[in-house]
Length: 339
Length: 228
Ligand code: HEM
Ligand code: SF4
Ligand code: SF4
Ligand code: SF4
Image (cartoon, rainbow over all chains, first blue to last red; front, side):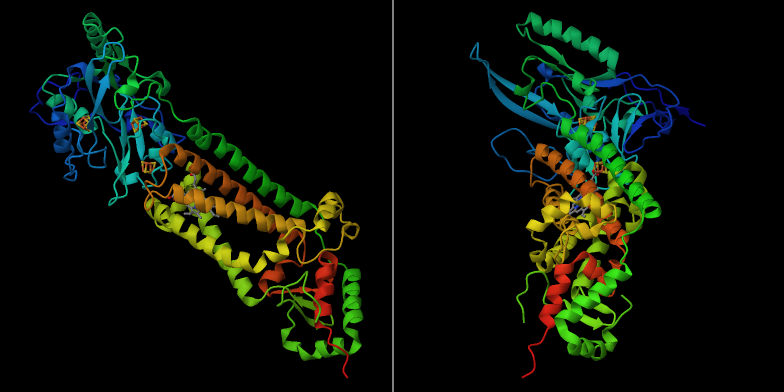
């Protein structure tokens, strides 16, 4: 019987040497896609968070390399298109991407080179999970990690529409989506994420969400003192907060960081699609089906009467005349069905 | 041979005692049931994704991945099949003046006083509504369906457009099921209708009661000029 790994509170510690069993199990799932009657979790883990301090990032991409290595992904060899960004976008083999943007401060005329580590934000209210039609293909643990369960993914791509951050990517060969897992497999054995572990400047730190917010506040005070008066923590409320947060030196203009949304939330179209469209739609279908069934049991059917039959015969006789009528009656005996 | 205004060239009186009229040729009936089968499969595979409690329906197709794969392919096939049906039926489904009068007296129909309604050609407004409803809904579904077809058209439209497309697709799917309920229900409530699509024939009484102009024209077209 091995001990269960303790939840990690930092990414810098070295791994324990004794074998430990994982600490994230079915009892830790608080939300699962397309699972309305999910059993309640058996315990509440401390929420975790990864904090990315953009002011400390030097754009070395050690985190990208560590991510590729830990997750054993195989991004294609790319080409240079005039930017340090490589590959050109997140892919199903590249869960995190350093995005580079040159920003000229309108007041000072200073040029800032803004570098943001893009990847899944691990939303408290995840749009990907809301959109997913496959039971259990996306889960959220009580520590805040949102994970894709590849075995249950059907490859529909709904999560791509659901995500306010444009994160999930479909594998064109395996037909399942991938994204940053917040290294759930490392976290479950007491280790911080690979990217945080690899970061040479400690721009990426990991721990409980409370600790990370406290750390961010210190960083913001420091940045304020150095002239970044709008420095701010990015933990957007529109998605209930996130478990990947940024310290943004230019905190009043998140969009400058390669399109980081200022006020992300699950699109109203997605809410409408996954909400009223489904409930009202099914109710309408149910009512129509029941109404039709009841009407056919209780209401009088629209039947053809003897009178109609006689009138039909008379009309046809009148037009065709007795001779043709008689001819038709005998000439097509085998065409006569039971109608 | 009289002009054709209310009937198809294949419609004819096949018996007179009692009167029987051929309403649909064999190829039209095959076309109809093939389309219907595809649409049933589309409803099963589509609604499996629509509502979590219906997800088990994906098992009919060999699991979620297969259902997801096959659904849009069946969708394109169903649209092509419907297109063939459309080309055969659209002309007599065009709206006419008497349809408006017919609609204004719909309560008489439900109360069993069909004799108070105007005489009709091959289709009444209800049938035309089903025909054009399915036409527009299938068109909407094939267009929105291609926009959300991840496997073959992953980058066709932007994510915001795709969100609208999936919403429109889901709403059209619901509406098309409602139209189909009306369609099936009307075919059963109006006794004598189903045989039109099974054997291809209807009774004279049925034709006289519901589609009198059609019956009259079919008979006139068969009236040979007097011999010498
Ligand atoms: C009578 C016809 C159709 C019905 C009843 C139908 C129904 C549905 C439904 C209910 C959904 C799930 C939407 C949701 O979860 O909210 C869906 C998804 C989808 N439909 Fe259709 N649909 C039809 C025709 C088509 C056509 C013609 C296409 C053309 C390409 C298509 C392509 C798709 C695609 C790509 C999806 C996304 C999920 C998947 O890949 O299976 N559908 N459909
Ligand atoms: S692609 Fe997979 S994870 Fe995304 S919504 Fe579809 S089933 Fe869910
Ligand atoms: S960022 Fe997107 S993919 Fe990540 S949890 Fe939020 S909605 Fe899901
Ligand atoms: S947390 Fe893990 S999976 Fe996510 S970006 Fe960092 S290394 Fe990659």
